[in-house]
Length: 430
Image 1 (cartoon, rainbow, N blue to C red):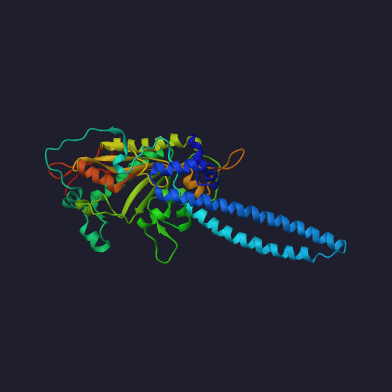
Image 2: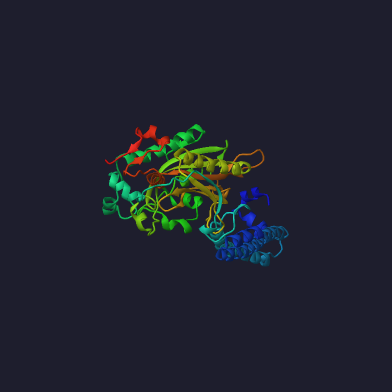
């Protein structure tokens, strides 16, 4: 199919006209529950349209009866039966409108939770193990000594403190100290420098968002469990700067595209698992810094920009000289919002495997339709496409630098691309 059709994905008209495409996509995802939702939506939409026709017919009848009453009175005829018939119509209309409101609420609820239509190139699979490797880069270093866990190494060097962070904030938090804090800023500066040279505008977004724009950005039914919400206000701490950047033009019509942003923010997430030593490290944490890429563009250009975003992330990894691979995320692992997603996985020599560092998604019009963001064309305003990609999530990148660049004497070499920003070539004991 022409994939530009997905630009109307969340509009009810698209689901009405292409229910077979939506159902086939849900089957590809293995999503039995939402297949039931789709059937429910179509049934309730048919009932809504039938009631709409009946209400419209009743209004037309009321107008006709009003004219008949006027004509009867003009002829001085008895119009009592016509008047009585006309009086009954508003109640019948109200009855149908009440049911229509109930139906619309349910239809809208389901529409907001149907996932995006997947690109035909997305590999079919049940989970992470079915993601398809696209390419791999870099030479994996060989070490003649046993590598230390990155958290242990950081503590030995005096550049991180996990125990005191747990004491005051709980598991999943950390203090970065001295050279490790500098290394975090160096990673951000390198990413910012690379993106601004490519024409991306820097954005410092709000670190909190209200529920309405957040529901436009993502399906909170899936995402809310990993988010922090303030107790007394309608505000959520952002999980990524993608979210406020996506909502930035909510209910607006954009004139000039593409618009390219580089978001700078801390990110806050509840999710954390029990992963042995990683509990005391920088891999699965509640708070981390991230430089995020974000693009608003026309549907015709979004696939080109999807490749641009992943290429930018790969360029950063090549500059850091950390081996990586890019995988295409399968149907069972891709989530609700993206039509296609790449993950970039960096090489962990200590675990002898690739670990996820960055995600790169083309969300087509999924977010824009929910947020009411369009762009101006000659004939009519159309929904734009939105794309996002991690440029660098610093906590995970710090872990891989500490692993790939540690030395036998316990010091850490600073990657060449970061030495200018750090002002030094190695990290020794503080």
